[in-house]
Image 1 (cartoon, rainbow, N blue to C red):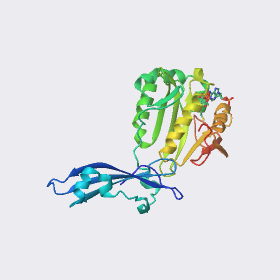
Image 2: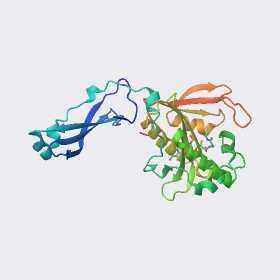
Image 3: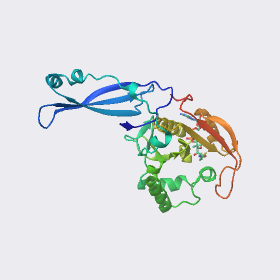
Image 4: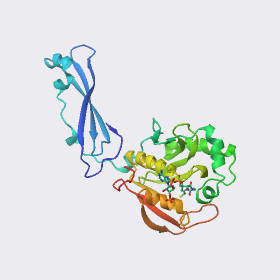
Length: 275
Ligand SMILES: CC(C)(COP(=O)(O)OP(=O)(O)OC[C@H]1O[C@@H](n2cnc3c(N)ncnc32)[C@H](O)[C@@H]1OP(=O)(O)O)[C@@H](O)C(=O)NCCC(=O)NCCS
């Protein structure tokens, strides 16, 4: 049995069963049939798969060779799913960059490469990126290379950082990412777009791809914390369907300050305007 995502109370589950293997046993006197049961929820996601191995003997053996589906009588087994996984169980899943890359319109998300270092260093000379994100002031190309390398190493721990690139020529437009918190089963999204690429929907598109992917992996809350004076980012949050929750006073240290930050969240059940 493999757990691939969450099963929540109220989910409507059904079983999609297919035969994935049929062969004769080593002595040749029995048939071995493996049926894969995929438990599908109302969104078409498959949170659980179960491989059921059946041994077939006697008169059924002939029919297995002809039609294994009939001979093993693939009966729905969704009713036997009694166990709802606790978050601590399923959040131990591995985080790996999706393949193929995420893409929508002219924008694609892929892991950063060492060759992006110069573009990262150049984008991070922008005063708004310096003021409103954790990117370092005066980031050199070598430091950007280290930022890329460290970021890629931290993927398995739930620090999910993507380069936002032009889907046609792969040039760097910006970055988006999710910092996953396994205990809360939630993730903070972070992002910046190079100044020259702003105002044409790059962040909107990149975040919609990121959020759809993150929620499909089982994240139960995506949130943003945004400086009250960061008007483009607060407008972006509202436009993407995030709900404004209030102001978190003196939220966290950033570059020698502890500003109040506006808190926004999006839940799997919230409407996503781009869908
Ligand atoms: C906030 C930020 C990421 C927005 O990036 P962006 O790519 O310009 O965002 P978008 O293009 O999706 O939206 C910006 C504007 O373009 C408009 N726009 C133009 N064409 C658009 C399109 N095709 N689709 C969506 N929006 C479009 C939007 O309506 C929006 O207008 P508004 O700000 O008046 O509401 C960017 O300003 C930035 O990097 N700022 C500095 C770093 C930062 O603040 N990061 C966030 C920290 S919380």
